[in-house]
Image (cartoon, rainbow, N blue to C red; front, side, top):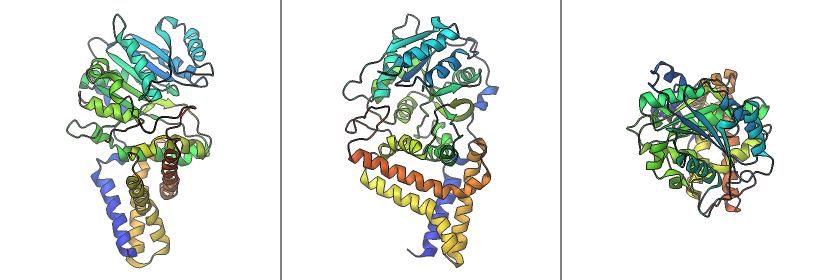
Length: 392
């Protein structure tokens, strides 16, 4: 391929990404949209379910932030202790005791997942089964990770208001990820950018489109709709459980996915390798464990992200100008995400370098799968033969 054709290809790709994928890069889908919705006549009951495995360092802050929610309805918290060896359950109990909310807090001892189940999904299922057996089951369940802090006391109220007024069966928030260490400042904003590119939020929120996605850290689910969909058993072998759940729930009714500043992840990623492990856990699953999809992704990342700066620096004539235009469009598209994370606009021009890291993480994910160590998380290897994903 000549330099001119490569340059035209990169520019065409970025024109499509900016204009043809629901304007995902604008980050316009925010939970603030629910502020103008009317309050329900009666606030429904909610049970927060926290699947946790060896999360003693963070789970107390999660439990405390949930208990502090100024939610007008009934809110209970269920911690599913997934065979933790670090005192996760005790940390949760201490937080509830400090808030004098033991009556609203329950710990369920989790067990090893049965054959065909992913560990986190089974823990979520145990929590959901507990809510279904209650004498007065809640209208909504809030699946939330142990490293999530509900920093604004109206975060849950805002989410429920939107779900009630719009008939949403699953409302999910892409929480504000931690962005303090150098590795986080380098790679975390791009994680959000790439996720929204894969699952454009406006398409997810459009009932006419098949695209379905969710962010597993915070998912408010209508209990009856989930039960009608077959419960968590319908996604029991899904490694990317949040997007799989979104696909199942979109068959039951409208779903919604958006950004928020009210809820944040408190999990630190001090080193690049830490983020690499997080991405590598599920990247190859996103490609459906296909070597051909892997090859196409690696080639696509090269043409889309790496070629524009190379053409700008080393090409000449029209190829250089067109490559520079593609690089500029790339940097512009990254700006809303950078503003969300209060990063300098100049980071937009570093997106090609950042993409190199994510390309390496994706290849590492495939290598881990080929070595029989795919989906490793919290000391547990997920069954690669059983794992599946649901495409958006």
